[in-house]
Image (cartoon, rainbow, N blue to C red):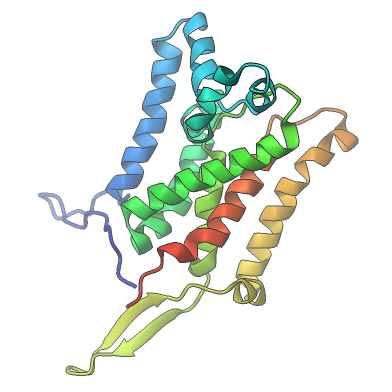
Length: 244
């Protein structure tokens, strides 16, 4: 499987390697997330920030209210995606950016920039869908890139723990790296490393709603978005595979 986008490998004038080797698409996506948060915190006043959430955060309760006033549902056309570009604070943003860098990198190297962004947005939608299914009448809203990045995590798990495939060039006899094959669902759970990572990740997120029973206080973590986004990326990544 050929890499569709490669980080720059050219050396500087003194022959030193560049410090950052991120693909351009990941740098751009992270930059957009940071720019949106900068604008929302430094440019908008409190009333503007409320309007930003009103129009671009995902609010499942709109589905309920739409039965009485259909126009209320119009933002549901875009908010299952745009919520991923808003964050509650710098800690929220930086955690998601770090997570994006780690798990988007293998995805973009395998599939390219377009499929990576598509998986991010599809997973954000999947996270919003599960969030809506579990919070429909609670009048809460969803923001953050967690669902989209969780989907990239699920996609990467399907191949990042698989062995590297090698072949011989028929003309030169030299060894050729083919890449890592995409594991089936059975193979993901048969491989000890991918099974451990997947089960721990799912267990930690599924345990979030149980925290109040142990501590008496809830965590402000949209675990539904994490699980929904992860499932979307994990299950839909085969659609982006190319035949060699």
